[in-house]
Length: 77
Image (cartoon, rainbow, N blue to C red; front, side, top):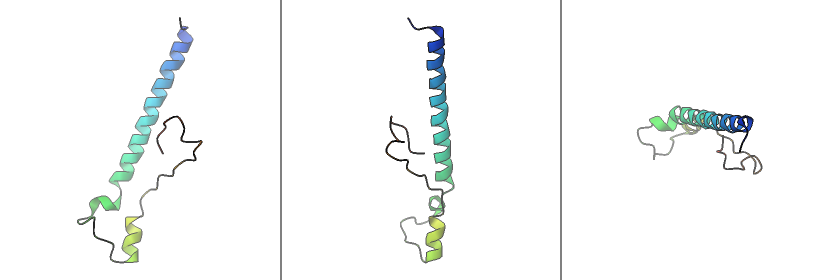
């Protein structure tokens, strides 16, 4: 039978995992909502000039971690 301390540790880890997932979802939603591409009338149309290209790609880039950093099924953040 598990001790009350180990049950408390397991519960706190689950709460921390839920909070981390909510944090990731919040940051991802902010990046998607503030992306200039989301507000284009014709998103399949190529940019007319280099300045428009730079504007479209000016969103927050989510960096992919190293192979060791993305173990255990953790999302890219």
